[in-house]
Image (tube, rainbow, N blue to C red; front, side, top):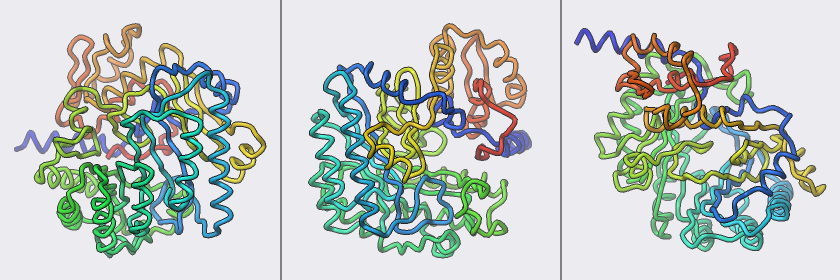
Length: 450
C-alpha cells in the first residue's frame, strides 16, 4: 500500500505539467504562415487517387456559446449569415476538386463545429450534393456528425438518415443541473434521451457521447452519477476530455467562476472515477480519454494495434490524407498540414473571391514524420518501438531525458522500445513530449497532463 501511495504521488506531480494533447505532430501551435497556398495546391495535386481520403467539414456557428467552449465557434442567429457560410463551404469544395489530378474517393466524412446541424437538413444536403458532384464516395463510407442534443428533432434526424449519416456524436458534457448552470449550458436529461431515441429509431448504428471533467462544481460523486446515467443510454463510444481553462485565449471562459473549478488533485480523482465507472459498465478504455464497447470498431482497432489519433481524437481511420473544409479546418497531407483562416468573415471573403483560404501550416521532412509516428504510437499504444517508428533517428538525447521518468516508474526502456508503465499511461503526454522537437518554455499554451 505504501508503494502504491508513492507511485500515486509521483503521477500526480507529473499530471500538473502543461503539455500538448498531441492530436497531431507537430501540434497546431507550431504552424506558421510560411506554409501557404502553393504548398496546399502541390499537396492536393500529388494526392494518390487510388487511396480513399477522409473529409472534415467545419461549421463554426452555434445558437449560443457555452462558457467552457474552447472551439472555433461563434453565435449566429441570422439565416443569411449561415447561408453565406454554406455557400462558401460549397465553393471551397469546388475549388479543391478543380486542383486534384483525378477522381478522389471519400471514405470518411465528419461534420464538426460548432453545431453543424445549424445548417438545417436542407443546408447539409446542399453541401453533400456538391461533394457528390465533385468527388466519389466509397460504398461503405462512414458519415459522422456532431450534434447538440437540444436541437435534435425528428425532422432533423429524418434528414440525416436521407444523407446516410451512420454515426452521431452527442455533446452531453455533464447531466448535473448545477454543473450545467455553471457552464452556461442548460440541457435537461429528457433532451438527451429524446435525441438518442430519435437517432436509434432512424437506424443510426453508432452513437458517441462527449463528456468533460474538471468543470466547475463537478465532484467525484456527481461524475459517478453522470457516468451511471450515460452508460444506461447504451452509447457505443464515449470521449471524456479534461476541461482546459484558458481564459487568456477564450473570452467566454472568463465568465466561469474559477473558485468553483476543481483543483488538480480533484481532477485526477475525477479522471480515475470516470475510468472505473465505464470499465464497470463493460467499456474498454481506449488511449487516455476514450471508452468503447468491446464490439465497437475503435476497440477492435486498439486491440489490434490499428488505433490512430487526429484532430477529432482517437480513431480507427488510418488514411493518410484528411481534407478539411471550412474556417479553421486543418488538412493533413503526406508532407504537411494546412489550416484555413480561422476568422469566419475572412475565410468567406477569400473563398468567395475564388481562391483557397490557407493561413498557416507546416511541412514534414523525414525526421518530423518519424517523430510523428513515435508520438502517435505512444499516445495510441502506450509504446513505441523506435526501430519501427523512427528507424533513421538515434534519439540518444530523448532516451537520456526519459531516465528520470524511468526512475519514477513511469517508463520502461528495453533496447529501443519505449513503454509507458501502467502508472505512466495517465501521463503519457509527458512521455510523448520528450520526442517533440518543438516544445518551448511557453507551456501556458497547453493544457495540464490530466
